[in-house]
Image 1 (cartoon, rainbow, N blue to C red):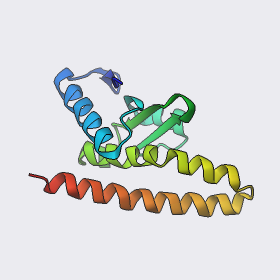
Image 2: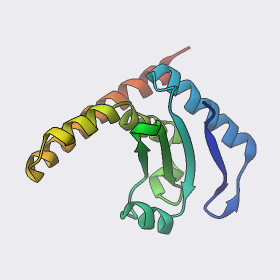
Image 3: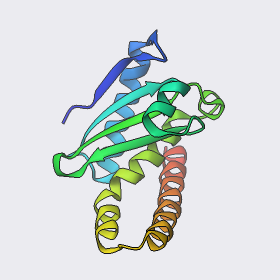
Image 4: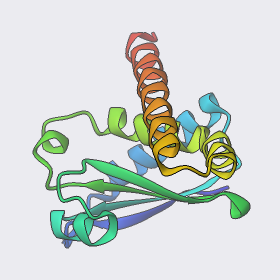
Length: 144
């Protein structure tokens, strides 16, 4: 599947070469993480757009998916201070880890009915995701 890149960053015309590099990086990571059957759209949002879409202006990035269609939209808040001085690739890996665990996450949610247990399960999934993302990022950075 071909990823979709929105050639616009925070309302400004984007750098087509930079987007192609990011698109290639996403495709490479999809293969490594065995999620290449997903169609992923990458969007760069302003802080306001992040708040409108996610409800948290402080979020660096978030991903929404439709498991039945194997479609995801990865959103990056390009106005967030940490994004400006951070490797966007590391943020993308973290969000792709959420996608890699999407089936497990939705299965757990289906089995757990109590909200307090759902919150615990969500916290455990986030911790697992963060560890997975760090391992992939470290392997990527140290690969020759």
